[in-house]
Amino acid sequence: MQAVVEFVRTAQPGRTQKPVCGARKFEMTCAGCNLRELCLPEDLSASEMQRMENLVYARRKVKRGESLFRAGDKFSAVYAIRVGFFKTALLHNDGREQVTGFQMPGELLGLDGIGSGMHSSNAVALEDCEVCVLPFALIEDIGREIPALQRHLHGVLSREIVRDHGVMMLLGSMRAEERLAVFLLNLSKRFIRRGWSASDFNLRMTREEIGSYLGLKLETVSRLFSRFQLEGLLEVRQKHVRIADIAGLEKVLSLQH
Image: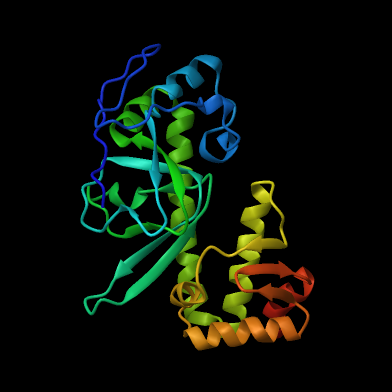
């Protein structure tokens, strides 16, 4: 993995700080970013937004297949995804990969390192990606000055906990049909929030990666995609998926009980 860019950790309002190691200067302000509503607290004042501008020092590009960070790396920053999709995964002792999540623009990566000071998972780009780098030391400093930022971070952490609990329920109590249906419906809702199509999208992850996340074998995932297509719920062309019947997909859940 490329070395993590080190940043100057002291920032003063109104001063432009430059990242070292040749990282490209952040060109668009947070206020002008179309993902602002997903990454930042609402109702920041002009002065608070100016303070926030000092938090983001650089963008970092991560090519498809490269790691943003790996398990065991020292934690120093949180990353807001600006472009592209990532997967987070753990490696078993025998080398098998367990996918723990898929992240898209407007979501944060790196929160797993806050408690221990070390990342516990790998974050791998599923396509060419770009992230905003937010040094955590500055997040803490600014959070003391802007309570809304601290509350927002707590909310993000809470959602991560709820998501983890949801995955546990998914793997522990749902049948294979339900798992895939929930996965697709969850993607649809996340796409809606970003102003994208709720029913027509490309899957950046492979079916094998979907199976790893859902606790299903590759053959089972492929069989379910074919079954849903035959039942008129989906139209599938390789990685392109169109949900033809959202209500019908939702009904898969109620039919299993």
